[in-house]
Image 1: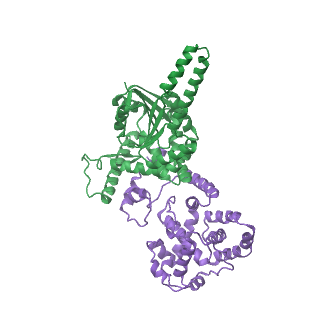
Image 2: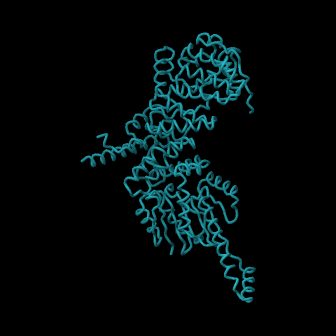
Image 3: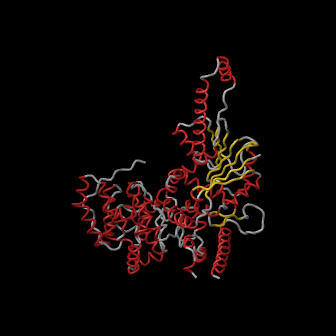
Length: 321
Length: 274
């Protein structure tokens, strides 16, 4: 009884809030607002717990990341107590890229995934070379001279990472970070929209999107684009906040998210609202299973997900075959 | 019914009562943030409703941040808002009991560049309150628009009192004749602490002197400090004055009316490099 009443009240509040928000927005921006029209201005979506038009969402998400860009990495460390580094390391471990692979890091912003990727393939290459030297010691003179000729003519393919982000501020911060870390070879920075990537078909071996896909207005379009730009055999990998399975952990996580994270945002970055949006957008993102079916609908095969930290973060992976 | 609703509901920004009330209210206070202007769902533009836990965390966090970096004025502001509830109530009541203060509370004047007539103030004679205030702004290279908006006070009237206190701070500098260097700021903080009782002022008054060198400390404790405290105790409530109607009044006259003595020694103001 109480549950159904609660449900009715919740629906009533949601309806009344949407009406009020639309009217308020209508008064300030447009003279009329028809609910069944097709254009992006009238179709509504969620921005955290608010309901906004789709065009508005893209603008507001842009503003959020423009505001947080300078303190983005510090805030990540503060909010996750440094655990986000482990999640990203686990992504790379699952990816296990081989030297010569081409990575597209969408919503790559400050470059965390790409830096790790380049570091990983570099150490892989070193390991390969060490192994080649070790086993090459018993080669005959003929084999050794053959290997000299291959080195001259056919150099090993270099791995490249392309960081693509819609937000110029985030890319700027990422570039500065790359310079200070001394990472320049094999890295490029491209401004682009995940729903409409500025790349040709069949270009990349690996497509990653880490903590970015929940900010995209049309997730299915982003998935379609991912499928398009990947080579056949290429892998799609998505790291994103997801639904916590354990109920006790879920309550602690909710309390932490809503009580502490906006406070951290205010104290460290001077921006409460952006971090309020961030924690609300996590709640609006589909669950692990739902997102898995969305990826399968887009045309990926062998779709799997792995939960990290009890479901706080999930890694979804699929292949283009 | 209400106690059954999960705790996280209280945090969600969809308060249907406050939203419906707030959309009908005219925007009395203009705010600089985009979010606040279009979709504010608190009690006033820029209002962010917070729970007690959040306020406690904010006050601790902002206190630490402000101590580490005193140039983070937003943190000082947040500290003031989260710790000043009782003091704001007392201030509001004092204002209500004073006829001019009551006028301020009902008319809600705001001191910003858009509401000040700078050319008219520049044409006022030297020694008048408006002219001296303008001189203070120019000498110290400050603007009244640099005050952060109030965010965490959960009462619309008290939020205005807090905002008024912030905007009156520069006027206090003029009234007391204090520049914006560290010594001048500490002197004004001592005055404000006795006048308003805001914990943030008290904290600033106690911790500010830690950053002064020996000679300035001596000046503070021997002459400026006692003068500031004395004036704070004896002066009329500075928030109850409708400053916007007194630009033509002579500064000396205004000081007499408010029971403020001129400063014994003026700390050397550093001309800020533009």
